Image (cartoon, rainbow, N blue to C red; front, side, top):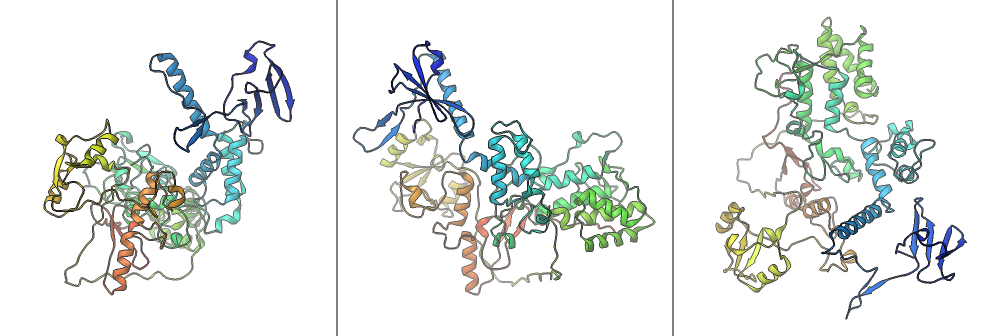
Amino acid sequence: KLYIGAYDPLTYNDDMFSKEFGEGVIAYLAGGAYSSSTVFEVEDSFGRVRLMKNSIETVRVKNSEYSFRNAPSFMSLLNEESAERDALNEVNALVDHLLYHQNTAPFIASRLIQRFATSNPDPIYVSSVAKSFRTGKYGSLGSGKYGDLAATVSAILLDPGSQSAVLDADPYHGSIREPLTKALHVLRSMEIKLENGKKVLENHFPFTERIFQMAHSFPSVFSFFLPENIPSGRPGEAELTSPEAMLTDMPKIINMLNGLFSAIKYGVSRCNNGFGRGDNESNCQEGNFTDAVARLSFDSQFSDANDVVTELSTLLTGGRLGVQNKQIVIEAYISKLPDKEAGMRIAQQLIISSPEFQSSNTVVKNGQPRLPLPDPQPKGVPYKAVVYIMLTGGADSFNMLVPMRCSTYYDYIRIRRGVEQRTNSLLKLDATDSNQTCSFYGLHSKLKTAEQLYNSRDLLFFANAGVLTKPTDKHSYAKDTLSRLFAHNHMQREIQHLDPHLVDARTGVLGRMSDALTREGLKVHRFNIHDRAEGLEGNYRPDPFIVDASGIPLFNENPST
């Protein structure tokens, strides 16, 4: 294989090269014979015309068995114009390499399918969409150019993997709807209307604080959820992914329903944990929109209860409201008559509480009642707790804890040259009563609380610890360890699971501790603050209980009667 590009032979004198034509290849021969100066013109599988030089360059490392192809490009430190040109060329080459990589099309296809259609697309569906990305065509749609998103999205929306009616009844098809999508769906379909000339933008919805999602407000570089997220419960047992499930724990679901219920009953305001801002809750009476920024103004033109609920089902669930649930809504609507506005409000609340509104596939009930779990009774005896603080994202641990007063410090300075922490800026930790390599360690100057905890013997550091199947090095880790390294999201999962040998792959380190204590006959409960943590997943019930940072939110404090 040839990897070195060549200048276009047509830029030289006419008599410099002669042509020879082969099957899909044009050879430009310098001096009429094949040599290292020969240039081959080919069209690759992406339709790009490539000019390749007939030579291979290999760089061999002196006194070593290592070698690599093509000498690296060294930027000039003197000629700024040429250095800028070379840097731009290398960046363009890297972008081309990533864009035309063989994994790019299926990767983009699977991610876009998750956003537009289903969380668990089958391989045929992904292959069809990836083909449209590569060819730039889906049927007659698209420009025929590589990476055409019009063709890609057309394939996502029109392919049988999305359109087939039988998929609606497939429990593996579909997805949970994002909180922001649901909130905006209700506000738009129920015709939100500004009140008294007020501007919504000046009194914007605190979606980020309430449902933990807002446009252009990602909490991290990983967006709102991970595409490979496997939720707990029956979907997790079936190894199904559900990215949106990361935003559908108990506090977030209650905050979402409280906000929508409040918008229906009082307009967009603070009443009963509504989506509005401000402190005025003096007029929190159902049907009173005096202090609301906006209200839902939808009014059905039908008079028959069945027609009204059918229209609401079409607007809020795409007509997927099941027969049994529809009848419940109809009866509730009729019970409010002749007050049609009150009937509309109760019908809207019931429909947005239905599973048909919360997900995108057909709901099938098993007919079995869901029995309420008994409240746990306090035992009146002391308990012990293990607190696990997960700081998601990347942490430069060598910027936090630094060796001091030992030879290791000089290794640290040599390796971290330019970004090292100097001893005069560090908090000193005494390790003389331990068997550590160094008698003192330095802590980052901003970690004063950690210093106090360490000095009071309430804190330990586990340094240089990772999740590897066995000791390895950078040359052979791929075959030595099952752990997926070099990606924040994967390493966050690994540190919560701590199961490099995949003994019990679906459990986390705290979940297995809980399981072991449960087997010993002890009562164990698992709690997580803010969102689901894989480290708490275990094999015994009850499942981890998720609470908000401010406590347990109350649901629908003043229900419609």
